[in-house]
Image 1: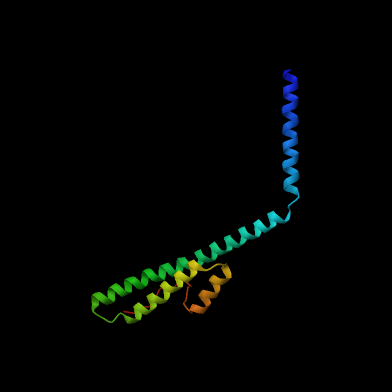
Image 2: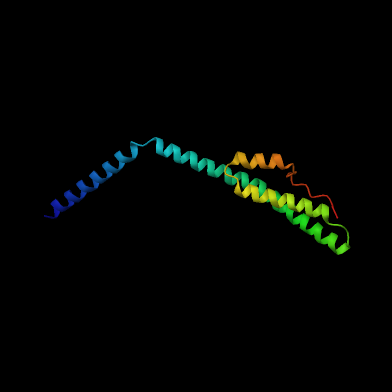
Length: 122
């Protein structure tokens, strides 16, 4: 009786495995499409990170320049304009659907994201 139960269990497991493997092997296009979606998402994340980090650094530097200008009593219009440009760029990058769109946004914005500090605008 016990031997029969073991045989039935093993046969059921073998059947389940063979059906599971047969179901997976038939859809070779599905893993490829999934891999492409994963690659696109990874590329988008990398492009966003590569651009948002320098944009955030520039925003921080510009905010400090704005504070210095306000404390010194000098006009801050130039700094505010630069801040608006970087804020708009950051929002657009976060909303970009593809890595190519991120690169296009950066190119069209005309801002320099090479990591050099913002010149003193105040």
